[in-house]
View 1 (cartoon, one colour):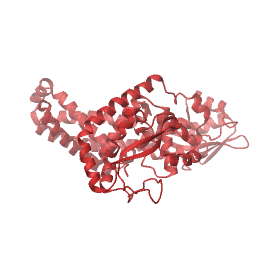
View 2: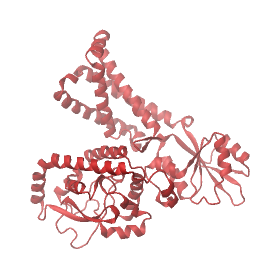
View 3: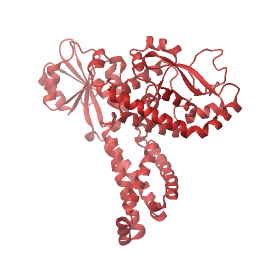
View 4: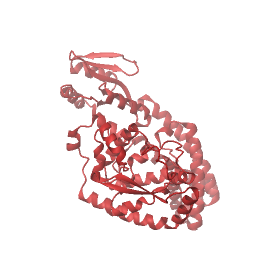
Length: 471
């Protein structure tokens, strides 16, 4: 995993993206040679800003591929979905190029070159993806890993690694400590070994060496008196990489495992620390963005207000109590998307799938996130920040605090209009969903930075454009 903008990205996925940028640029360069000939293509590329035009075109296509989730874990291994989304990305790029060339004609590369280049790109990228997936699944190119532990943490890490083949990490076995002091190394697939008992470090090293293990992930739920420091240090000195299970889980999933979170981790880890600069920066950036957002959306407000009034009777705005930083109660402002009497009979409830209380106009507002425009006023006032954990209603807070450990940590920072949990997880409507979103929120609080905020805003735009996560 490579850390960038305080988030973690698989090295192989980054390599895939960088290699595809190069292939796209080479495809359009080859298209120029095929269309114009060697001499004219050289003149165009060197003296008519051809390379700059190709770089701009390649950047636009990569942007479209990213927004169509062509680097998403669930898409990488699905060849049919890759082809479908690649065609959609190419079509979207053509629309974007038409607008760009209309606004700035000097960037135009030439319709003939673009057409030939798109044909090359489609063929080259499909073939490269097939080759990449084939090589990625080869066992010789994977990092053989053993998980030390057999509790819930070990099971969770093993499951996550199995779902992420692009990481190149293959769990070949589990290591556990027996009551008689021996170590048991058991295979995940019962092949080529099933179970190996080792009473000494040399025995265990021999067993691990036979399986060509290069990494051990320590995922013990209770380490006191069970962590064989000498053994692990000996393994490390022999070239085996030793990693903490919690660290691996955070890197792979982008969330903090609250079940194994300890007070010592909160106190002594490198995260969970807000500097004065970061607090000042977030406040300044929130003010600038909220003012800009209110000015830009001002022409839309009369049309939104008219649509709400015509769709259902009731107030235009919905003012709802929410819990902010340090547990302070404030009123969150939103455009009304439900019937005026939505909670008259039931009281405070979470919104569900296909919730009948949501009006037709309200559903559209939720999909486009236009219902949250008034929250920019909350940001300007200081009740909220642009990026942070979503504020929860007071009616649910006590229930969630009793059911979920460390839930109050969400209130150590200002809540946000968008956040890490919002772009990584669906809309929640139960305690289990709130627990899962807390894992993401704690990851954000632990790794909070201007770079991570920028990444979240960028991903939020993608979420809005694709209409995800709304109810």
